[in-house]
Length: 493
Ligand code: TRP
Ligand code: ZN
Image (cartoon, rainbow, N blue to C red; front, side, top):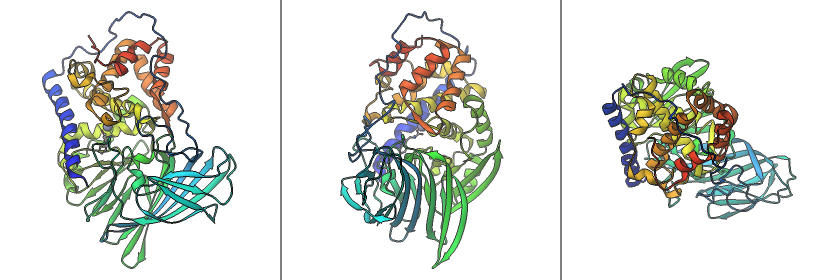
């Protein structure tokens, strides 16, 4: 684990959290609420946003699906339906043995195709049961099947591999992402590009799939993963095999697999959603208290965004002082300091829960659209304050007026600034500006429709602007241009 980078990120995120805390303290709860700002409507062009990524199209056999920030991520020519990850974790050696089975269909005739894989030694590849040729080119696996796969055909690829997974840096992320281990436990921190450190994958949120995880680990270890536990078998030699099924389509950066000394906690059901957690034994007692608000939060966000979008939810508390949290699908990752914060962690947990709707059910069509994740989750924090006796979102947003670092465009921050404060805070302020322009009724209808129309898929900023204009009947190009793309932070006045 790269601890220096980790601390930097922790400090950056803590600063954001601290600012929000300050706002809560000094704004009190008597703000005068949000409302239409009474701005006059000129007639700007409908689509002022740069057309980012409504449909990224690459070329099969070329590295990358055409993401403007991460050109190497993802591949084209096929669409993955389901991954089966068969993993054996040899904890004492830090070695992972894997067989990944990928069920996909060809979106055009495929003489060859790519997968993303970083490190690991590939031992064999089959396509449709026959041996296929494989070459390594940097972080790409180039696979040539024995015969061309015709457009529209479903095909199954198996990759047998092994090695010590090494986290990767894009040169642009603060943090080396991927499989993390300190020799005692292992878990995953992938956003945006770490999934390929532990399995061959079409590593871009535009290609979601369902997953089966079959993880073999020492019998004294517990495995947790996205979705629900389907079976657990003692397979001899002091090892146990755990099978998890994640039935909701998922972007690869949201995969979670954790192996350690966890307590699996059944926390009942909320409106048909299974709530279950995995707490490392060293923080389990504290984490129970810290996560007590989960059911209420699921209900509250259900009111904002519509029904919780997945089969399950819960928190994975690992035995590592992370200083950040990550919204891995159906199973949010937190570290020891958060697990020990009690109800002071509510706002962090609320943020990660919000991502299950905005980011996970509706994923960014390109990494340039990251404000659709982080700006929305930040705005949801402000809504939560507003709905639980705290300051109005309008006041929370105004507390950031004039902050210099928000002069960076939230809608195109650059890959190096993917998770900088502008993406979170100016992104959130953008939604407040929209709310004041279209009024509460249309604003909340836009939020619910956004999730309803794009769940299980990926959507772009252009899609969001089009939806906001359709629901409100207003031309909003100028508003989004100023809030997302101008060099200076606008004022809410
Ligand atoms: N998505 C995380 C959040 O909820 C932040 C994040 C993005 C992150 N990439 C990460 C955290 C990599 C740790 C490591 O704000
Ligand atoms: Zn977030």
